[in-house]
Length: 213
Image (cartoon, rainbow, N blue to C red; front, side, top):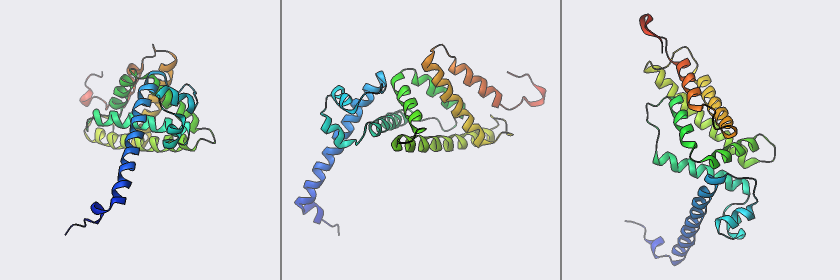
């Protein structure tokens, strides 16, 4: 027999109401912030200035995000989650194919690229616990995903088998982030072409002495 005590408890209903409204308000702020930062990046503005641009009070913003850095981390994570749900990577996609697609997608949101780079840079300095936790967790998660993809790509004969999956995953991340930084400084940097070179270097040798690409 189901327990109906919670449904009959006015206090529980009141607790759920403000909690749900709080979550919705926090999500609304994140949605606005993603649009703002996608256009212009973080630009070193204060939490008060960010609140003004988002159209909320400083008190409302600090109620949900205790620091500017925490807000920036949550904005990037939410933007990344939103894209992952809208356009999940194909199961069979190789690591280089994923990074190439990401590079092309990021051209449309230079502000989020700048935000990501700022968070990674802050993670390397002391006194930035939120950025450090974000970058450390993200690199570990992306690296683990790429390792699995390397192993699948190798098993399918689409990547040379004599390279270590961990090393390949780390190399692909380094190439992708490094090219992204160069592109931010010079839009003529050939990101896709450079990643294509990496893909060809990782490709298995031709069978029976056939022609190479």
